[in-house]
Image (cartoon, rainbow, N blue to C red; front, side):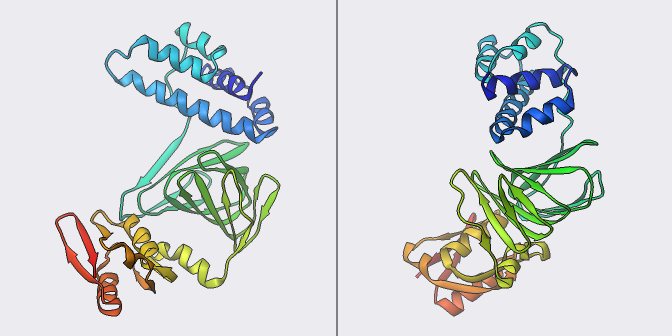
Length: 291
C-alpha cells in the first residue's frame, strides 16, 4: 500500500474514532514519507469538510477528493454517512500584520507569534505536535511528552528548550537557542540553524550578532547587519500594511545596517534618506524609494 493510501485510511479511522494511537504513531514514525502523506491527507480532508459550510457542493468534487486522497476506507466512511464532522482536535492562533501574540500552550509552554503568523497545535499524553502554518514563531518548550514541530512538508523533533521557527515559502528555518532538535539524522544544537527543505544545506553555526538579528522581533525591533537595502525592505515589509517599494532597482544593492522599531518605519526611512541619499515619498498605499 502506498503512503498516500495508508494515510487516507488513518484519517478515516480517526474521524470514525477507531484509530489505535500507538499503531498510528508507529506507522507515522517508521518513515518521514508517512508523516508527510498523513499531513497532506489531513489537510485535504479538512478542506473538504469545510465545504459543508457552502451551499450544495457538487458531488463530482467529493468523488474527486476521494480519488486524490487515496480512496479506500475514507471513501467508504464518507459514503456510509457515519463520518463525524468534528475537527482533528487542533487549536490555532494567529497574529495580524504588524502585530504580535503571546500564547500559553496546554502544557505550560510559551509561544510568541511574529507579524502575519499562524501556529496550530495538538497535544496528547503521548505527543505534542506544533505546526507553523504561516510566518514565524518563538517557542519556549517545557519538559513533557515527545514534541514534533511541522513546517509545510518537514518535521523536526524538539527537546525542552527555546526555538525560533520561520516559514520561508516551503522551507522551515529553525534556530535552536537552548536545547536540541533532530531533523531526520541531523542533530541541531544551541546557536545552530538549519533550513529544512528537500535540498538541505549544511548546518549553520550563527554568531551572537546573527542570533540577535533573528530574534530582534521578540523585542519589537528589526536589526540589519550587513544587509542590502533590497533585503532590508523585504524584511521590513513583513511588518507593514503600507509597503516600502524600491522604484529604482539599482538601489536594492546598497548596503545598510542598524536597529529600528519593527512596526514603524519612520526612523528607517529617515536613515535611508539622510544616510544613503535616497529620496523617500509617500503615496496612499506605499513608501516609494527613488534616486
